[in-house]
Length: 205
Ligand code: TYD
Image 1 (spheres, helix red, strand yellow):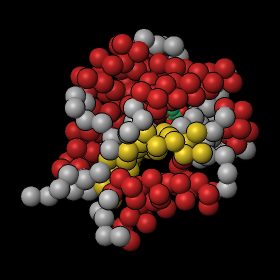
Image 2: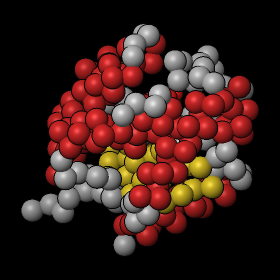
Image 3: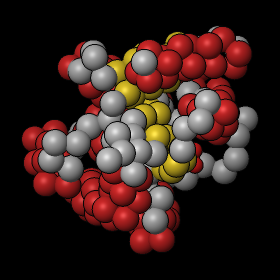
């Protein structure tokens, strides 16, 4: 029987730079003989990608937003993440439930208890083995975003929203220090990569 694969998630406020490290990490792991699935949330299946389009571009309230990201997550887990983990594949996922607590809970101020109930309903007993939290001050992330492409519903939010998202991540990291690895996202890409690869090596040992 296969050993269950590792589930590694990437988190941080928009502009923190997490996405630039996912493909290099996948290549690095493949070079070491791992089977790797790279995926993202909301998204990762045809249905979840359709829901992503709605969440990122259609106006809606925070409960609807929360239900849609969890609906997308349920499909993604059932169709893609869980079968991959069961087959021994390492799954690298760009955002997961911590993003819901940070964005809908922190950013939107939506009820965390309800989010915990949805989490328990959608993935009882499953948590990432490692969550890389790309930590960057909200003001610096805003500068990086300003240089990037057209903003979606989240990226066009106020500085105060991103401060709350940032606080949401900090609270999640403090509550689960074993699962979370804080990556200082401020230095050069090479320095950030050194932190990422060290954290992943530690969990693969
Ligand atoms: P993001 O990883 O930033 O995609 P891209 O790099 O293509 O912009 O994710 C899209 C947005 O979705 C991001 O602004 C955060 C938001 N989001 C939530 O609000 N809740 C969630 O549960 C997830 C997974 C993402």
